[in-house]
Image 1 (tube, rainbow, N blue to C red):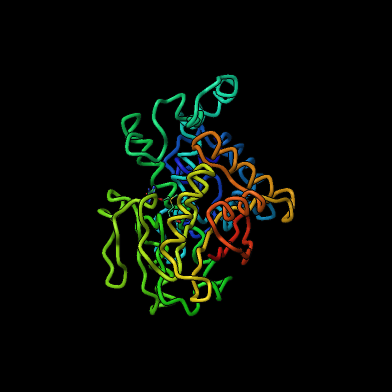
Image 2 (image 1 turned 90 degrees about the vertical axis):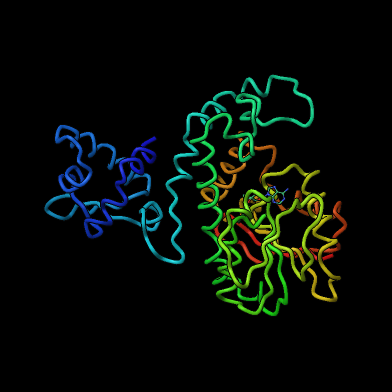
Length: 334
Ligand SMILES: C[S@@+](CC[C@H](N)C(=O)[O-])C[C@H]1O[C@@H](n2cnc3c(N)ncnc32)[C@H](O)[C@@H]1O
C-alpha cells in the first residue's frame, strides 16, 4: 500500500525531476501536498527506504532521499531503450479486484468447483483476467492490467540479450508466439537485424501493434497454428496456462519448427522454481506462483514440471541455458 501510495503521488518522478535527491520539504512542495502532511510523508518514506524502494542519505544536514535501480523503474517519462515504467504493475497488483480475489482464497479452497477450474479471481468476479470480457467488470482495471503486464514482460529482454549472446546467434528465423506488440522482437532485431522475425498474437493485439519494416505480424491463435520458423519463442506466456494447455501450445510449436538437426528449437523464458538462488529469490518466485494461483488458471513450474510437459508434447530433450534473477531460459528440442 505504501508503494502504491508513492507511485500514485509520483514520488519517484519528483525525486528524479529534483535532480536525483530530495528532502522532505522539497517533496512536499514538488508534490503540492499540504505542509501538515510532512511528518506523515517522513513515516511513509522511512518504510519505503527500509523496504529497499528508496535510499536515504541521513548523514547530510537535511535528510534526503534518492532513487535506486528499483525506484528508477517507477520514474515516468524516461526516454531510454531499456526503461520500462512499472507503475501499472504496482497499481494492478494492489487493485481492489486483485485484493478481493486474494481475500477470497479460503472460500475458493472450500468450494468443490468443476473443471476447468476457475481462478479465485474468475470465481469471485465472474470474468477471467486478461481476457476480452475483463473490461465488462471494470474498464480501468482492464487498462491498468494490460499496461502493467506489458511493462512487466518487457523488463527482461535487454538483460537476456546481454547475458545470453548465443541464444539468437545464427538464427535464420524466429516466431515470437504471444509476442504482444512486438517490443521483444524489435529489441532482438536491433541486435540481430538478419533474423526473419514474426510476431504471432491475437487479432486485437496485432491490430494495435506498431508497424515495423522487418517484423511480420500475424494475427492468429497459438492453439490452432503457429507461423513456421527455425525457432519459436514463448516468453512469459506458458505461466498463464494449465499444464494441458501448455502441452497443446508446445505441440503446435513442434509443428512450426524443423528437426533438431536443422536447428529447430523452442525458446521458453519463464520462472524455473527452485531454492538454488537463495531464500529471497525463491520467495519471490513463490509469490509470483501465488499471484498466478489467485488471478489465472496457470502456475509457475519447477524443472520437473517443465520436463513432464516437454515429454508429453513430444520433445526429445531440453537445456536450461541460463537463470537470470527469478527467471530462466530453456531451449527445448524436437
Ligand atoms: C503475458 S503476455 C506475454 C507477452 C510477450 N511474450 C512478452 O514477453 O512481452 C501473453 C501474450 O499471449 C497472447 N495470447 C493469449 N492467448 C493467445 C492465443 N490463443 N494465441 C496467440 N497469442 C495469445 C496475449 O495476447 C499476450 O500478448
